[in-house]
Length: 382
Image 1 (cartoon, rainbow, N blue to C red):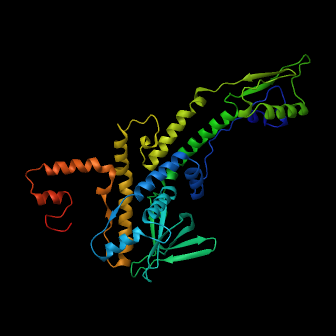
Image 2: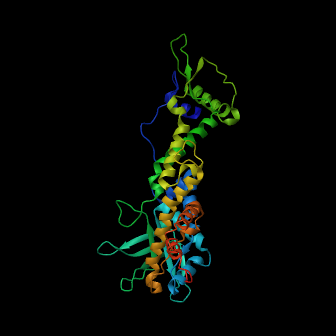
Image 3: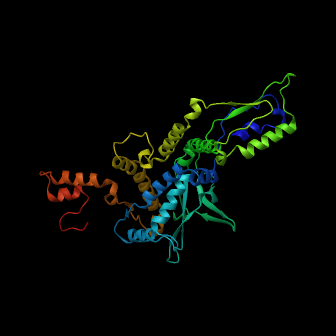
């Protein structure tokens, strides 16, 4: 902080070295590169939110309808390409959705009998529209060039599946939770930078060096004196390694410490509020992130159930429905992919309570009970 007080140029070589403050907030730029670096790569809260959502959706199991189409769809999702497993691919797709608001899946090799699914980086994809404004193809740009994937309207087949979050002002690209949380991410990061700067200054408040007025009525430092004083302070009294070193003053200099205002000292609570806003944008209960001060749910189990019910399941179901629409023209029929909710551990207690409630209903026959639980009648196939 002493560097801020002294780094004002020669014109500050007067009776007091003062600091001027800006009047406006500074926000990080918007765009995929900024969201990926400032949000995902450098902010622990945003990073953890993306990981929680993507990993939870990737761990969700899918079921399919009976028949060749369902078997082919499940086989493709189990081993989508030679380099990834199904959960790895879904993890990448959901991560792209959280950071960019868009995710793209490219289907290749279907004609040769060896279909593969690959995730495309969203910042490299450009939606190509037709005369009516609808998406007709996608251009994928890499360092080696650009490739265009065209939709076949006649057969309904498309080599690319575009998943996107709702955007109220854009017809072709989605709005990511990272963009909605961008300002909260900036506040959280700025609070961390402020705390780091304070620690680098030995956790002491800033102050001002005042030149006492001499007998001649003058109280100014010469340019050489100013530069020498500035160099000594930067080398001898700033940084954590110089914590506690006494400040030796000479030549009529006086140190006037300036304490922090209550608003400045409240940056810890401001960071916590920013962290809660980030979690809110991603649909993650703050309790799952270990953030203090959140009493929305009475315990961790309730918070986890709400997370799966309100965030994970809608994303997983939306992904399954999009895959059905995408794969049906290629497979010849709807594979009827759906989420296997019974396999989700977060709903174990709810499932047990439902089974017990149905089992105790004496006015229902066994087949009726099995039907309510999603099971086939006795002697039938599930």
